[in-house]
Image 1 (cartoon, rainbow, N blue to C red):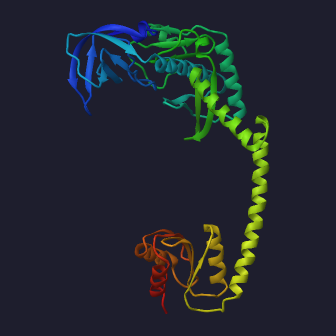
Image 2: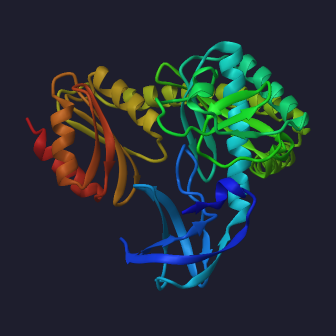
Length: 386
């Protein structure tokens, strides 16, 4: 089969003849051609999509040297068809793949770390390295990648002989046999690769790191190139602009304003918590010390306040077992506490009887009940009666 995606990587449509068509899984059909411009999934790059005549190409993969086009309808063997590639999608992958090569090559050159994982998704591209880089180091590499892009360097496709390959320094994730395809970007990267690439680095447009997490002793970097990077920037810029309007702050002051609001909110939360503590203490003083079970229903308490009030009541000796509930009829949040009963067992029983969820420790349990107030009272009292 002639692989047009290598010989003519910018081909958007092509003519071919169907050599075979057989039923596949999930109502799909597996079509093979005498030549194809559709790239099959491989090397971290997804397979192309598009159409063959009147049927849609949903995925493309290679198996035992055969390139299989997964279609939504059958095509008769011997039929001449026009293949049309979803070019916007493919070119986006080409931009991202070439950008990743420059990025991984520079990381390897500057810091000695290897690219040990690569994936192109519909929302982002991720690259895994077997070493850790700081945010400052990543920013420096990002700037260098964009300088290489601006130089509009050629992206070379090489097929070295075995002898030439032995003498060549290149990146590869695995041992290779047979004819090896090398993608070289002068003074940027030399790497074994089966993917599709742009012809010059200028076509990548822009390279942007969008995130980084620590992963398996190294890091996983999220990145985007070209139109994907522009769309990501536009989306984030829209978010910043909307926040700027909501906060009545300049875009560059959004972070500072949010931090100020967060600090003020924390102070208010502290004051509210103090007032609740005073309220709970006053309510507790109205209750006589007791070794009997105690159930209390209050309005408008959040889970943390339920826990605080419950703890205050059972530690203050107002009940051998204390249940504090808050909510509306038929739907309550609860906190149960005791220093003499196992709350894990109690919450398990109450959850079962009252359509509840939750759990905790031997001293304290929290959760929800989907039951009426009277049913909760009766079930709780019956279970913990003296």
